[in-house]
Length: 451
Image (tube, rainbow, N blue to C red; front, side):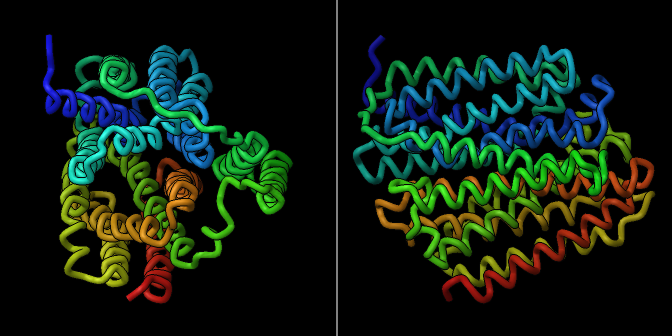
């Protein structure tokens, strides 16, 4: 069957977008299954944190070097390899015999995500030579990710209700295979370049971020004075120092020094970290609160998330129009204040509150991050030269993912200290912490972003 050029373009774009959908879907779809996983594996709060963080941690740490692999082995090959790794890890998640197996498989999913996300954008840039067509394809890529993030909780709830918790991982298999098929059929063979793979830097950053996250996550179980916690913290800090020193001595560092010297880029990276910290940390805690405190089913939890996710997506889609009418500084400041108000409302939560009473604060904190993030991301690209673009983008993406990891770890720690029997108090502690982070976000926006 012959397919005209317009049809090929659409199928190719759809195939690449499906790869990104896999990544975004797994960010939100697993949240509604946390309580089911908790009962199935007899898991604690810290175990559930690792279900989320093992994925995000490897995703974040490997993003820094993923672009180099695309240059070295060909973007198409790396994209397909990422999807196949993601599919294999999803099968392993579905048939995991223990919570530790599941955590490990989730980490492998993060490896696949780190390979396919940067390469998916590069594939679109390579395929479309026309600037207008390329812009449309990238807009479709971004929209598909936002849609997957919004639909994830509801899709996850439906799958768990109809087919059980394994289905939230098995759904990745047919979606991934369709993406691979059409990518192989329509994607051009990507050029290859002789680029050095920063293996030592990559090992150091994975070790540093992994051990620091371990110390933060497991401190509730072992205590801050435990040799296990202190050892992880010490070795993690040493690995981070080693990474920084290695980067300074390297002739071809992962993050270009000129990027780190640019105050606007660094400010944008910090804002991206804080935005994801409060957003994804809150999503994780709301999932636990809905199912443990309010006794909602997985499907009811997914529906409870729907207003927040849809409102977040709508504000995200409207961000380009808002950016043309308002200054970035004020949009980011407004976003921080809207998010802060959302968390402030949670300070008044009572044990007899229902899910609908949480809709307004959830929608506000989702809208707050969506007001700021598109403009901040655009500032990164406007500030970076062509030579710096890959390095700046990788740093920004890594910081955002680590923000999500930190949010889940810190908010989970506060919930653990409050105790499973006192989730309302834990949610109030988290709201106070998030308000403080939102004010830091406002201060950086007010003083560092361009007017």
